[in-house]
Amino acid sequence: MVDADDYSRVLKDMASHDGAVSQATRFDLAIKAFEHTAAYDAAIANYFGQRVGSGEPDFPRTLSLQFSKKQGMRYGEEPAPEGGFLC
Image (cartoon, rainbow, N blue to C red; front, side, top):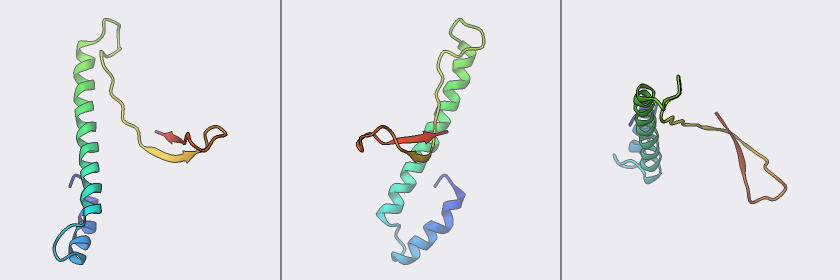
């Protein structure tokens, strides 16, 4: 677990599954772990990319960004392409 807010949810899940964590909870926690490590790796890459630079002042060689979906949005007139607002 990478988020202390998940402790109570995991304990509740374990209580209702004879001490085990359900597959759905494990999958959600795995996603959170990968998101957490990706953000950490991106922060390190950004830090070093800024130090090396691209030859232009104040512009890093690489810039890694991570966004979270805040809401779904209508996109176009066809139902297939779903849009979203990220920040």
